[in-house]
Length: 103
Image (cartoon, rainbow, N blue to C red):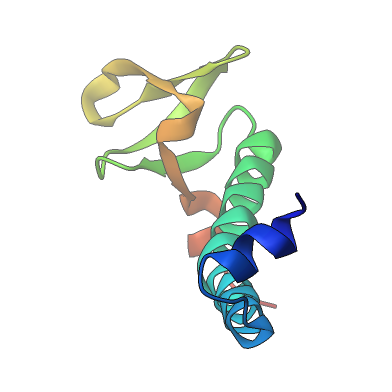
């Protein structure tokens, strides 16, 4: 038995329902999935462009300057010379570019 025969035996098959479900899927993709993928791509690019000496703000709101980097973490110096190690994913904003004067 084919799928169409099974669906017809179960009460009929309406192609309008298939069209509506596809439309809902497209709306979900363009309003939910695509913006999240773009945001993740932009954050990855931001983290890859950071270098020693850049001022950053973490997702916890901690402001500091990058003093060391490795594959997965940054060592950030905060006020008073205290150094804290953060995962790269915890960086929220590059404060160096955010406070730079616009030309």
